[in-house]
Length: 357
Image 1 (cartoon, one colour):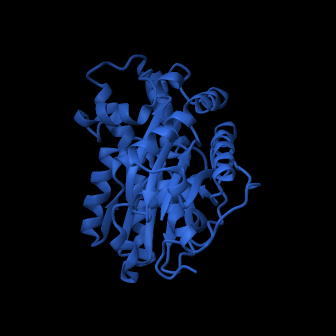
Image 2 (cartoon, rainbow, N blue to C red):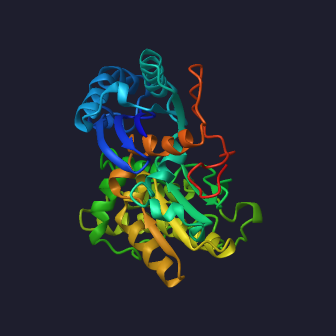
Image 3 (cartoon, rainbow, N blue to C red):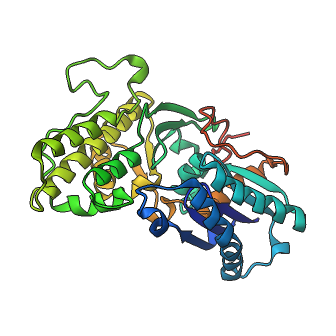
């Protein structure tokens, strides 16, 4: 089955042709980073205008690159939630119009779940074997930070999520405090490589490190507002951060965010006896996080599947790939399918699990 995936949930206009859920025939992305950099974040209305300009050329480019004609498609998949409503509406309207014009079914895709699937696009063998389940997914992006348990029947459950800022937001806001530019995550990752992670003592919120026990209902939740405030206070107290001190400051801050992600994920893996952990989402590109989770998981005798960087940041291959499994189960949507900004914490049944029905 050949599916056209379309992604427009934030500031990337993307299209991809995916065959049978795992063979990516094309993946085209038009980024808006330069447009929004001056604002220090994404402006929804500007993003929507750029999507309007880019979506048709991006889709046509993906079709041409894959050497596929529209009548050869089996379905059209589009990110329908969560995301920025003005941006989502552009992709959804385009996908619905195209589906109606060529008489193909449409499948609305949850962007959050698509990020999880991004870790498995190149590894169908993992999903095919029930012995690999339950799988624990650490989803880390600019908008979401969560630990998700995926049993073999596919009935996924969010074990914990962020109570305030997502990890990606914490990095972007740190970069803004220090006037480093946007987006902050890649910049901090690069500059922190030569820094000393122990130079500054930033808090690890909701871990009990400050001597206050963590409430049971929050043991797998995250909070990054405290570490962000601590960074702001540190910068104000110092007055000026020298070029020689900046790598240490960033390395210490980055470690404070990533260490909590890793510790809570491994604690959940122990409690739920999950043999496999997958790391996905835009922040999953972070080199410190990838190395820390891989090393600590190996010590804990867990296998880690790292989503390839090309499938970590927003892309349409993860959308078209996940849609294959919905189509296989005949789970399609109607043309009046809504676009929703928020993530529904009831994730439903993930169709790529081996015993999903």
